[in-house]
Image (tube, rainbow, N blue to C red; front, side, top):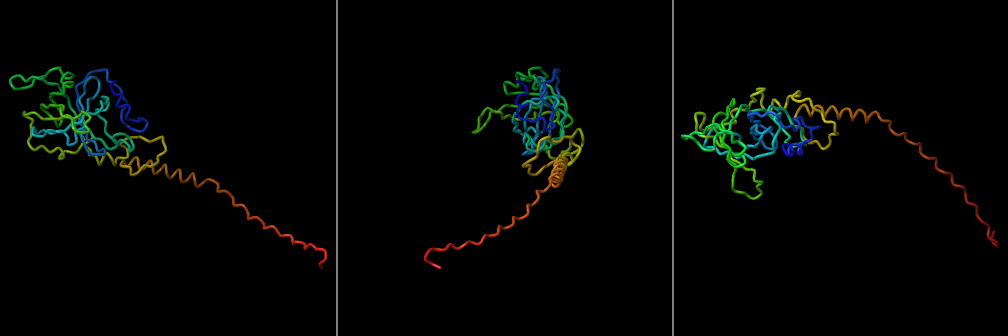
Length: 265
């Protein structure tokens, strides 16, 4: 069922991520989110069938056709994730800071080129199921024709979710493209460090006791935890200390009376 895996992996009482809800209205948006989790990567998402079909791209999308970017398909995300930007608290799935690196619209392309060019089509679901999805992006940073190709070979330990994200040769191709040169959000203009250090990025506080926290990346979360620790310390200091009992008075020994033995004085 759609979004079941998304729901299973998250504790929504602890994370600011949107709840799992399939959109009733069809759309054709796409979003790329830069995600500083265990490893820095980019999440590439295409709106399709009421959800965001999602891939984690370790090196990020490229406008250079020579770059064949590994893209690991992950669970579908709700459409409301489109503009999510903030910090996922530690000890939660995907913990780390997220910014919206690019947004725009997309359209599937005919799987068969006409006169050497791909034309808009409506076979997106079929192409995705086949493992050969061709599409056109019209974003703020990513534009032109791309392809997502599912890898056929199964490496040891592979889950079968490896794809390649490839830029096609067109007017938007850019040789030697460097995604690291652009590190700010298209929505807020902030980078990962600025979002992570923003105490007001998300108004979220855990209702659970925080134990075994380790190092907290988000400054706003660290402040909340510090205040909680101070309250606990103050409360424990107000408790009455048990009164010490006075030491017992040692008992006086009664002198023993010597028994007289007959025949002896």
